[in-house]
Image (cartoon, rainbow, N blue to C red; front, side):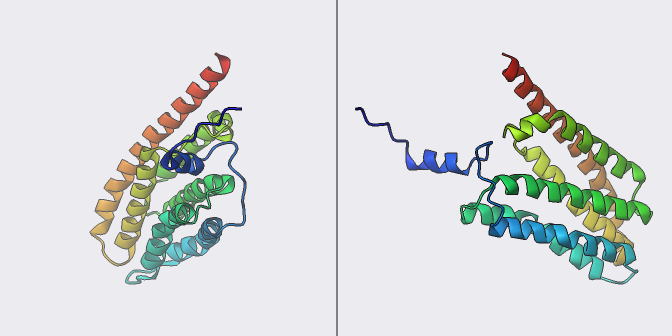
Length: 205
């Protein structure tokens, strides 16, 4: 009986880090706990942003801390080798819900236009419905444009909140970045829809 060819350790490690349909659910991990904590803190953060008064740094600091922890769960998952199917779903869900909640809060406050929330939510819904099957099959990885989009939108929201509370010139920069973030959101959504289309095409062939 012939021996199975062994793969180099680097290839094995890369394969083990890649999420897919066979990735274990593993809900009880440290990275997932961090993501869940971010999700639970979203309501208090939005509340302090909503009730923030001019001259108060509290909403700015809380928002900055909440947004900056976006990379922590992913880093812990890689360092502790605790990647999971739940984490692959929960992290982007928390990011999207965070963007929705913050955009809604700022729209109600009159700080940003309602069109921002409308475009973001509409495109997210389109992607969710058109790419659900590809996502369940593990064929819809987060693109670098999607990651850049999320980072730009978080920075934009932070600057807009700063402009409304402690430093008015930050609002102009934040509004510009908000437009950039929405444009990246459109590009990222188009990319995800294209990935889903390729997945459907491969299933038919």
